[in-house]
Image 1 (tube, rainbow, N blue to C red):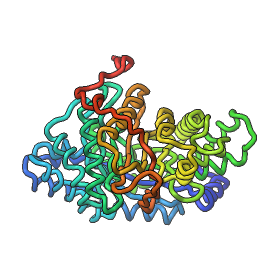
Image 2 (cartoon, rainbow, N blue to C red):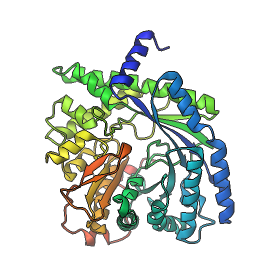
Image 3 (tube, one colour):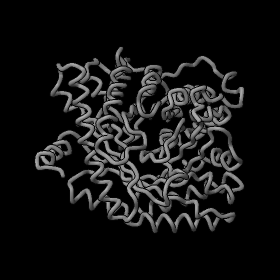
Length: 454
């Protein structure tokens, strides 16, 4: 049971330290909607999601009102659409039609995002996978709430370099298709290595084929809470520092567990996992970079940043895992540039570069996230960035991702404004030395030797 002291403490975390439940995400399997007729699939998708998620938003709002816990987003993730549309989609326009259906049903039930316009191609691509990938620029330009993710590699299978090279073109084309909105389509597109089946965060959420018919996954967030706790132990040694982070992560995760169990009970859908990631927002004081500063760095990017982030990530996991029956998703510290005011300040001060961010991804939960780059960046260069990040995930047996935004018509020194939780970002320089011969080789980078564990 939660005692009266914990209630008071939780209230303070919510009112003064930006604690929130970032998302309740309902995962829905669409495997039973598969048909060789496009209209049948569209109707099946629309009917099933409206039936399953009819009360999702209201339930989140009711829980938020009753418990006084902010629940920022209500979202849906679905079975990767390359699987759902494989039999009925004969051309890219057919997949775009399914994307429009997802967008319509997301608006109907009131969620802010729907994820799962996805393909899993870590070892190879089917015809349906290729069609979906080629349809992404159009699909993201004609929809508002659809998010797309492609898994290009894994520790078990290696890296699909044909898909990596293709995604360099797709990211750039998505930027061009949405250039009137500062290439915002790319904010809804992410590529993964070792993508988890139960991630509640966008843009990478999809409902894995190993999951139940429907599931409730919750993502909590509390960088401001962790920062505040660390101000109380400013001159302490690492033992005290680690204990403080663990205890704080435990408290944050308890809030998420309460919301998840309550939502699952009210909706009559099983509870899946808590994702206990520290996901920053543009709000002042809600920053992972500021936690790193509180630990002792002048700014994120200074020498010691990777070590500090590794410690933070590990202690968050150790503390949070004791507070929930099931922890999953990404779970750790996110480092999206545009969504974290401290990261933005570090970039503007020259303390944080793309290369340092890549080093940090070796020890954090995701990867190169919400990074604005010049609009004239070559697709081969984007593919090279993706390949580097996929390699980090493959070798280190962890999830890594790339969500970069080539802002068409803008260059280094300019700023792009996305708004809301997506924030704003300074456009960062990219290494312009060529990698065309490397990314154009084709084929697959083999899995590392430690992948063979059977």
